[in-house]
Image (tube, rainbow, N blue to C red; front, side, top):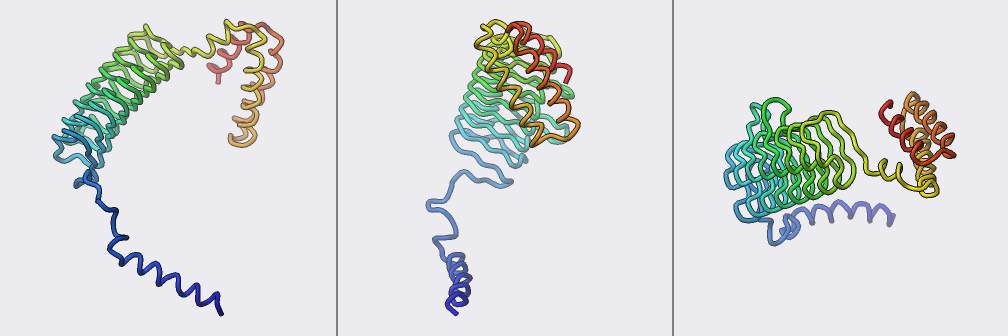
Length: 258
């Protein structure tokens, strides 16, 4: 009987909270919400907005020129500063910039992700996929990229000099620093370290990599991928007795073949 009484009391409490004025909104209410699902906070943020929707600008001059671009996020002073946006052509939409000056020069590039001060700073964009689909994580990563697309740079100054290169992968600080227009180039600072470190240092890392590969294959991936990763794991274990340089080369070949 007591249980029935308490259960019947719960809806009354919920109803009271819904009707209570203090439960309707936080106090003071947020002052950065605008029509079209847009959020702007700080001086000149989203200053030129006309028809753009679902944009978030936090920081001085963030998304200041954005007029029609949709689904952009700029957090930091000058983030996505020159992005204008045109959803009819797909230009200047769905970009994410977190950090002062991140994607500052972007005008037509779309679906870029820049995390770090001045990441993708000079990215402009252009026709088609030019200046789009880039991922830069780290201070000044892909700093000089203008129309290059589908690049991945992780680390301080990774792909720093890239301007028009496509489909490059740089993993680690200053990885592929001097690449300008090269395509489909890969460099991993970790693999470079692996190839130059003593065997006593590299073997524990190789052991961990092999163990993680097998664990992933068992718990996450499908049967075909599992078989491939297990095969890779066995090959890595077999090479643990080799020199560190040979092991690094084998890992590089394995990653490319997969």
